[in-house]
Amino acid sequence: MKVSIDAEICQGQGRCFSIAPDIFSFDDLGNGVVIGDGTLTKQTLDLARLAQSNCPEHAIFIEE
Amino acid sequence: MTIKPPVQDFATDWDHTDPQWVNDPYPIWEDLRQRCPVAHTERFGGGWFPATHEGVTTVAKDTENFTSRTILVGNGRPGEEAMPAPIGVAPPITSDPPFHSIARRIMLPYLAPGPVNAMEPQVRALCQRLLDDMGDHEIVNAGDEYAQFIPPAVIKQLLGFPPGDEERFREIIHIVMEGVDHTEEERLEEFVPVEEYFRAQIEDHRENPRDDFTNYLLNVEVEGNKLADEHIFGTMLLTLVAGIDTTWSAIGASLWHLSTHPDDLARLVAEPDLMPVAIEEFLRFYAPVTMARLVKHDMEYLGCPMKEDDWLLLGFPAANRDPAVFKDADQFIIDRAENRHVAFGLGIHRCAGSNLARMELRVAIEEFIKRYPRFELADASAVTWAPGQVRGPRNVPVRILKERR
Image 1 (cartoon, each protein chain N blue to C red):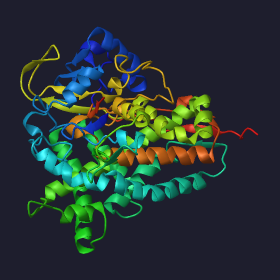
Image 2: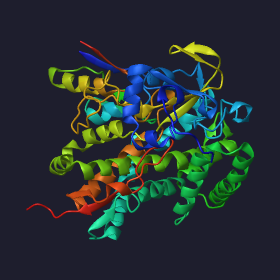
Image 3: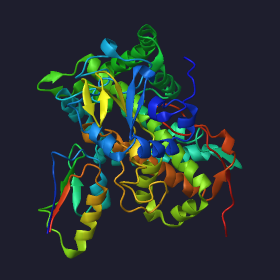
Image 4: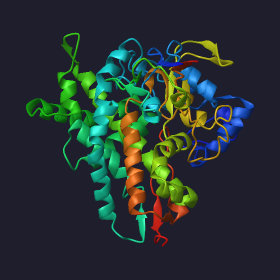
């Protein structure tokens, strides 16, 4: 299971890294970035899904 | 100001300055969602208002068919008088692609989470100072003694403007936001002191460079070139106008909510960890900002015959109440976990100051309820909501209650 952010869609709304700071961070412009390679565990999947469901831009994708 | 007849039917004659809309727009929008869902008006020279989340997001992301060269609805079609895109008066908010992304990239590093988090201790100290000044009166004004002082101080700090000029900021915002229905000639005349003020600040920063956003704008280079003076002025003006009464409206509305919903206040006091989630619900429910676009060319869009230079009012607050996207959309749910609200807009014009606004809102509420864990609205009739494209309560008189033992 992997999570990714589409950098073309992300506008730096800042929701993902405040909801799940262990999964997401931000770059110099404040756009969201995935920490590491985005691999999710059973424990982190729910949090990643929660971030996904809060992204106003629909920029977060989860491969299950 | 022109005296306008009251609106009889918002579906065919919407007016965001009508008292009914200003005082309680939510039932109007719900009605429009069921009947239209895109409302029309002949006022302001003609315009459209999509009331659904889908309509708002579709337009916000569509820079092919809509331009941002004017974002405040005025009393007529802007036509040739509006500054041409792509740059506009206040880049990047008034810019279209491709220039928009250049102007935006210049701003964003200064407003990213890193620098914003570094400002938090100062904002907290400011809030504490304001609360100290309010003292132990029985009734305090969470609006004009508290909320409205926070963003001006933050923006003053950010731009490096002199202390004591906050009243000046208010005049400038008034000129920009509320002069929109004046003639072009009046507008130009009103803008003279605004330009003079900014020119003096820029001059002072050139002579006495310091570490602030103004000096950053003076020094930043794009492909080896410094920014044009108009660009620097425009971005500074944007920072001041967009960074002040927007945020104070959000702070005021949130404290007004807590003063009228004791259960939410008690829960927030008891569960400080709830704050980030609560902040997003405050933003969804009381989103203060509505933006405008202009239709670029004649077209059939969202089922409507839109004409070039028609206004398109982007009701982010209306989108946030759409039951098609939000369960129990008309209920304030302080622990709402899924909250895809669009209070800061979306697409390429997402509010560049959203990290700053969110931090100010959180710190302002945290400090207020820490100082006053129990309070209630003292005089509902004193609460008046600002009209136009930034909506928030100016006065929020609250009675401070004794803590329960």
